[in-house]
Image 1: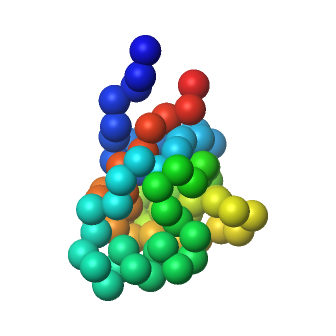
Image 2 (image 1 turned 90 degrees about the vertical axis):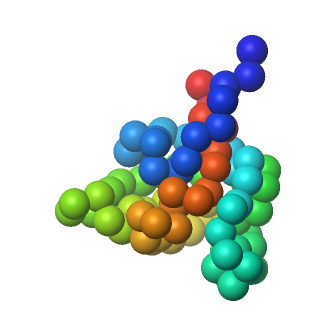
Length: 80
């Protein structure tokens, strides 16, 4: 059974997922793709900052902070 896609912001701290879709504007999408955040990339939500913005994710061996409005446009499939 396949889990439904959800925005990155729906994950809990410590939860892992795989990137399924990036619906960001082209300039932001391009920047993240250059960093290696592409469809099929495993990610882990490390933590949320105060007021849940920004949030920190870990992928490909490094950590990255994203603004909440950007993370809401990154859809992932949680890893059970």
